[in-house]
Structure formats: structure tokens, C-alpha cells
Image 1 (tube, one colour):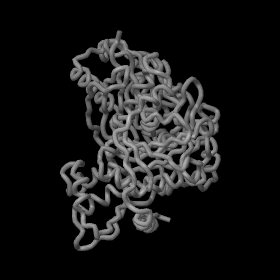
Image 2 (image 1 turned 90 degrees about the vertical axis):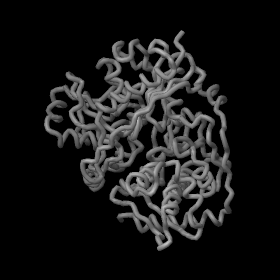
Image 3 (image 1 turned 45 degrees about the horizontal axis):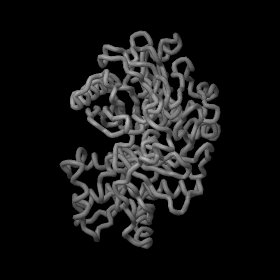
Image 4 (image 1 turned 45 degrees about the vertical axis):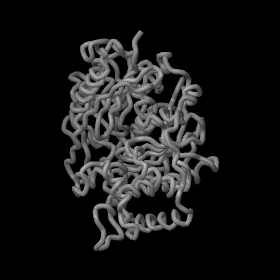
Length: 495
């Protein structure tokens, strides 16, 4: 009997491999950082070959730490940074350009032209998304139109395109499978979330040949097996979900009205709306939460482009902190009379503003402003942006008055940040016992497909609380602080 479920968690800044028991207890992990490539202002790329080697390296590291071998793995679940797009040669299997990362803004002018041409409403009606550079479809169009040889490869049927999950599945299976799951497909601007298929009209709009795209499967499904030489055994790939969807699954958000927020490079809040795709009147995204047994479960989602990345900026850009963990103590020590507001629009603003041209700004600086105040402003910016999202969600979907926000991701480890979040939301914030819910969700999907994990309702009963943060500040305090944020955003918007 094979002993482990392997989660491959391919993120924006790093790749991790985590071994879980079938009871979803983590056993061992490996991690590698991913090089961030910035060819021009607003452009962000990754090397797909580096992503692939990081996967094999981290799996080997996790196995070594666990004292296990590949034939101890029952199945693999994959979760990934979502809207990042890769194109590769069908014959050689080699990428023909760097991956264009979800943060990349190079297609802002193309999106603007489509909006001016009156295409926005039809795109949103079919995909639930907005015409924004964030999503994969415009990036794929850019690759086809601007990289030498890519369009001709597509015309001859020799180009393959997909999100990171598709790239990894293709490599893991030795080139035998070209697949994606419904959650990743739902983030491309090319997938009709109501019909459950690549939309011919959207493929035509973005000039993308259908034969370049992968087949779309459920989140728990047979995605093939790994080529034996890669890990030393053939292992079933049995679960796939985009990172935010995997986190919702790992947080057991299986009932309509449940909401989770993941704090990584960006921040993503997702509200389960059940079998109904709820259109947003507040510039949120209507998307899939997950799809099991052919049945889609929908969600409203708000995307914040910069959360943990603001802390990275303090470390790498300004040099005012040595490591991310320092920020909580610095925020605690900040001058309480300072009201420094950071609007971290380094790559534009996401929901609910969707302003690709906005850029970051600091407000409220005085001669007494120092590194501690900047650290506090960076952490607070994440709480303010989360309140933006929660306000929009409550306006779109009638959630219970006692809705609790379930949090996960690296920043959720910070007690200071989570307490500020509860204070500014004026609502409870629950941090689970296992903070790595994205990888856990991927492992669960594989275990569900293989019959090793229970169905969702039973899995939900195993969710365990680490700590609940409740508001310690008054509603008046929260209104005042949030008002400062709203004023700063108004001054930052490009229109």
C-alpha cells in the first residue's frame, strides 16, 4: 500500500512539494525560489524550464526528508499560479518563450482597445471575468502576435499552450497528456463557465486556434501517470486546481456563503456561491470554485495583486527590513501618531478598482516617518484591500451576518496582521491549524479521486482551528482608518 499523497504547489515566487498522509497530515516538504524576470516596466516573466527543474528538485527533497521513495506515493495533486501562460513546441516539448506571469501588464492597451470596441460585456457574460491584462487570453494573443515563429507553429498545429498545470502535466507524463482542470480554464478569458467549454467566439476574438489548448477535466480526475524515469516510479496524477481554488478546498469552504482569503504574493478572497454563477455588480469576478463529478460549484472572487509582495518590496527594494518576519514587531513599535498609508499599486490595482495604469503611492509622510511606520503601512494595506473585497462580496451575495473569514498563506502566520484584519473588518478571522491549505487542497483532490480521502462533507468536519481573531478596536476606529485608505486610493487611481 502506497503511503503518501504528493502535492506539487507551483507558486509565483517558489515551488514546493509536500508529502501528506492519506489523513492529510503533512510529513515532509521541499521548496525552491523561482527567478522573477522583469524585461520591461510592468512586464513579469518566468522561465518554464526553471519551473520544471524546481518541481523535480523539490519532490526529490521531500522524499529524501521523509526517507521515502517514489513508489511510496499513491497519487499527485497539482496546484499552481493561475493566469500565467506557457507556450511550447508540440514536437520537442521545449518552451518557445518565457512564461508570461499573471502580474504582467503588457496587454493593457489591447484590453483597452477591446473595451472601446464594445467587447467587455460579452466577455464578462461568458467568462465571469473582466477584460484585464491579468488573465491568460490576452497574454496568449500577445505571444502569438509578437514572438517570431509562434503564430506559424500554431498554424501548423505544432504549438501547445496552457497554464502552469498543463505545462507540468505535459512534462510529468512524458508529453502524453495535454490537460487542464476547469478552475484553471475558468481564468483564461477563453472558457465559457456556463457551457463548460472553450468558447468559439472568444477564441475567435483573441485569434487563438482551439487545437493549441488542453482538454478540460474535473478537479479530481485521471490526468495520466508520471513517466517512470522522472521520479523512479509511475505515479497517478489525480487532482488539479488553481491555487486559490485549492485553498478554498483545503479550507473546506464547501457550503454557499463560506469565504476564505489567501495571503501570498497577492491576496485572493473567494466566496462559495454554490450551483449558481452570481454576476457581480461590484467588479468582482464570477468564477468556478471547483468542479467535481462534472458539477461546477461557483464563486465570487476578489483579487489583490500585491499583499506579501509589499513586504518583499520593503526588503528587496528599500532595504528597510532584513526578513519578512521582522515586519510584525516593527509595526508594533511604529509611532501611533503617524497615519502612513501605502497604496501598493506596483502593477496596477485589482478588485474592485481594476486600474491597470495606477501605480503605488505613499501618503501621510512626515519627518518622523521611519522604517517601522513603513512596515506597519505595508501590513495594513493588506487589511484595507481585504475590506474592499469583503464590502463588494456582501453587496453582491447575501451572506449571513455572522460570516467568518478563513485565512491562510504566509502572511496569515502574523498575529499582528490577522488582528489588524479582524479590527478593520469588524468581523472574526479564523486561522486554521494547518496554514498550508493550498497544498492540502491539491493533496485532498488526488486522495478523493483515488478513494483515499472522504467526500467533501466528511472532509469539512476535519477542519481544525488554530486561533480566532476578534475585533479589539471600535467600529468608529475602523471607519476612520478605512476612510484614510479610501482617500489615498482616490488620489492614486489613474482616472
